[in-house]
Length: 391
Image (tube, rainbow, N blue to C red):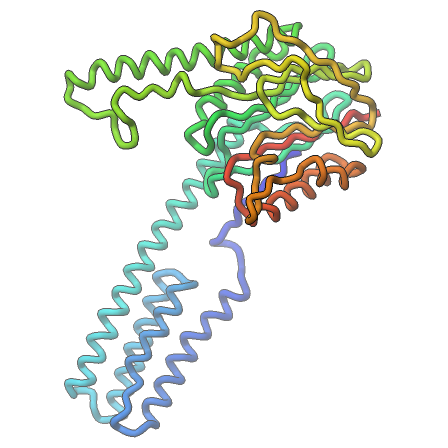
């Protein structure tokens, strides 16, 4: 059951506070007009009318700002008529200045409205990419109860390099939780590659080490293709007289530096154990009978994509997983989150207080506590999956 915040439709949402604010510029125009008319002739408060459109631009669109600006101009004209100074140089200067500044404010508001529309489109595309790439885990799969949450480091990204997926086999359920080197949109390609490979092969390979080897081979092949493309590009660049583009140094090749940490699990429907292969990933936490235990692999494998370091055979670790137990699988964005004093998030200590919570409730507590620890924004993407074995 994925826990994600849905962006609000700003065009349809009714905000009482915003509607109340529209009265403020109108009240200012009326007050300034009355006071200016009642003050002595040598005191001029008309220039203060520019405050009305300036305040309106802070919470309303360009159309409302234009209306308030026109009302401010009308009020300044009324002041000139009532004080018999409409054609004086002083009043004409005030009108000209009010028109110029109001036009500037409306123009800036138009640019801001355009930016907000573009931002809404980016969010829409990001949500679509998230639904396609990072499919929501089912609430129930076989004898397991699942819940997941994704927290992107980039505010508008919604999705990044962390990933998770689940697949059914003839004997149980297989889970993949991974973390691509890097964060944000730049790591989407590697995440999509690994998720596609897992979904295609999870139910085909009966042996978990074979599946891990297949995933590593898929990532290595893609990185090799990327490296070949980079070499061809550098070979053609001197001939065509082109540059590598902004932010890319000539001769740079990042393909050899990319990798994906991952944990691959096989949870049989029958029995009380789970089988795990850890490829350089933080160990999952087992919540059992009031205790929290890290499932540290005795023979961890290197991250996926480091083909020259890949073992000939992957070692499978077996751990108990009884009915009622909960398994917390996470990425390093959780345990490396720091507060204002640069202290890491104490995941093992905090999760101990939520042993009895169901997966969705546990994730709600963990999500709120983690964001409170970092002050509302993470420095790295974070993904968390909770698995409960039902009786």
